[in-house]
Image 1: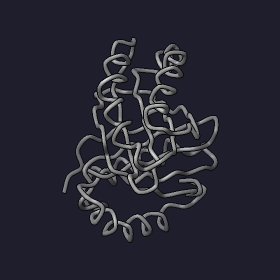
Image 2: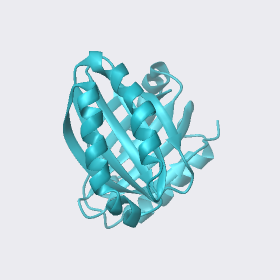
Image 3: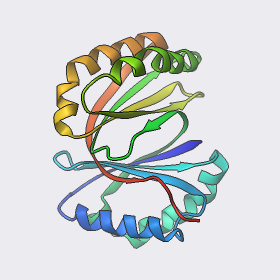
Length: 201
């Protein structure tokens, strides 16, 4: 499984209308043939969002790019925000429970050779520890084996649980970075605005 991660920034005053539009398009199954799932993460205060679309392979992502571009043309920038980046990752760990309402995104960068070791460390050490924390709703780890970049997204039942887990999350993040030989390049917190587990085809 692979994931296309698109980042946006801009005015969030019309974001709820955008969420409804995206949800309707996804559920129609006509917009993105080949897409398996979709996540939208949103930081209303910072005016940023992430759209994460899951595909079976990288070829399917490339085939969908013209459709993404067309959708971008159809939805005004003042509604969707300005796209700041698009990245493709391998989905290394995918264990997200339904009903997540908040997410913490940790971005790391290091040697490509450390990716596999880091994935194993997360599976064997981080997940068993973190899953005991109140409000835990799962984890998604995305990896780029060529560049050495990775994102680990932890999911929570709400912002209160996310905030309560901050101290322990800092410790676990540092341990994961050490295991991968990585540096932590960013930590962001989001509302889970959309979590579509199935897209019609």
